[in-house]
Image (cartoon, rainbow, N blue to C red):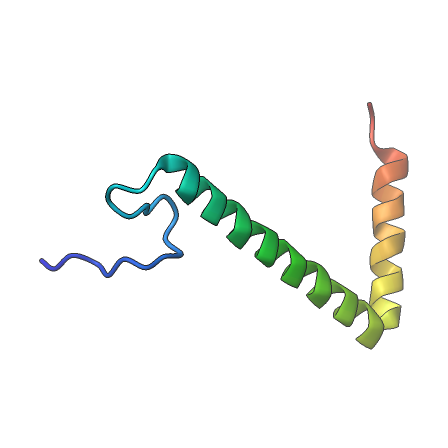
Length: 69
């Protein structure tokens, strides 16, 4: 059996001796970058496929109207 390669992006893989806060900060930076890219991709998709985007907005509006608090 061999040990799997560890990368910086592996969740919870803080380097030995590094404080937990540093790994938390790195995780937050990666998450923020991911969310920025996700938002950008959604905007691009909405521009490229306006009919599908409109249909998705209508479905979301229906979900919000029928949601029970």
